[in-house]
Structures are given as structure tokens and as C-alpha cells.
Length: 163
Image (cartoon, rainbow, N blue to C red; front, side):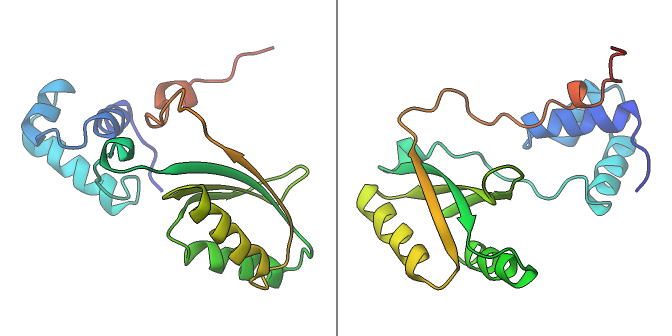
């Protein structure tokens, strides 16, 4: 991967917030010519820094739903155990995010289901589905306090403070 310069970072940060911003407006915002800006966006996309462009939906305005976070611990810890579970995760549309974590659990999983009954049925299918789940602690999201707004690139790229 090529090293990113300050213009690349500005493009990424701006597009993260405003993915529909026209190239000309993006170029003006970061003080580049439209052709140079477009070339950079194409390179950033080709190099995998930009995975895709998407709309951020307000699912609460679209339909009733329940969101659940769950801590999942597997019985076994072989590569096959992890692969079996992760394959099931990839094939379950209601699982909207999943991360392998260190600590007392193996995975943190985020679900979006129509209602609590749908979540109950799904979690029971997962527990009974031969995936080797030892335990699954579920936490119902009552109210969203902060929505994902993208990565704080400026903060992540700051040099560490000596301490």
C-alpha cells in the first residue's frame, strides 16, 4: 500500500461524511483541480481505501425493529470451530456486524431483527444449529445514544503523545 498524503486523507475524511459530494465540490473543498481530485478518488478506490459508496439509512423511520448486541463464546477454539461460526455469521442477514475479540468472549455480534420474538427465534436457531456456541449473552439496545459517524481519521493519524 502506498503512503497516504494529507490530500488523500482530506478526500477520505470528506467522502466518509458526504459520499454523494460531486467531484467538483470535493475538489474545491480540498483545493485540488477536478481532474487531479478524480484521479486520486479512483486510485484510493482501486487501492482499496474506499470499499464502496452507500447510503446511511434511518431504519427506525422505515420499520419497527430491535437491535441486539451479544457476547458469544464458543465451546471449542480450533480453526474449524471459528470457521464454522464465521460462515454462519456471513450467511445470517440479521447479523449486521461481528468482530472476533480478546478477553472473556470470542465474538461481539450485532443483530437487527423485526422484533424480540424474531431475535429469540434466531438466537435459538444459532444455539441449536451445531455451531458450537457455549454461551451467548444478549443486550437489547433501548436507545441509540450515538450513531456511527465514520472513523475519526485526524485523531487516528495523530502521532502518539510521549508519555
